Length: 115
Length: 110
Image 1: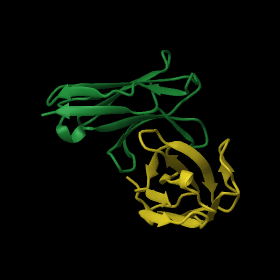
Image 2: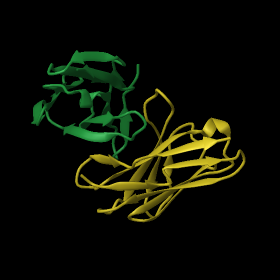
Image 3: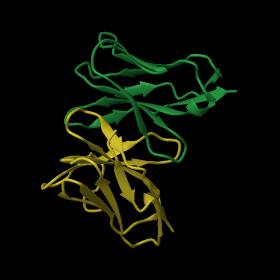
Image 4: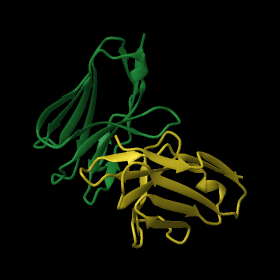
């Protein structure tokens, strides 16, 4: 299957600061990437769809000014959590599809802790 | 009604048995269905995709799809302790967007 990487794998930050998470497709080009958030013992919740060269599409209830998404190339999408608060602490996971099928491949995830 | 529903479990089976995981979905127009496995603290890993009615087999895994009943299942034959994980059913909602069920926790006892 396709390989997707994420960086960092974990991060601790203070309340009020911003954190950037990178998602890369390593062996294929991804015109579309997806960002999910997962709280403990819960399923994945889609936050937004990241489209190369255009604005991201956010799911209902997700603040686009708080979760900034940039998809500058066919292999890189970034999620910036701005003015992070403790309630933003979660497991953030990106995924990408190769375009040949509807299969999505997930990055290893980033565990964010806001103190 | 949730768009994708699964029994949360936990489902416990003895080693070597068949584990049966079930999923129902609400959108009758859905065309693509996926099973992911997620170990604790890790991200999901794609196990199977299925697009047509019937069975699709891959090693010890068999996915079954019944669009008339809006039902997808995953069978794991000869279950191993290493299969212990949460299994997530996902449905493509269009433009690649996946909607996930809440997941079924499987425990395979040696």
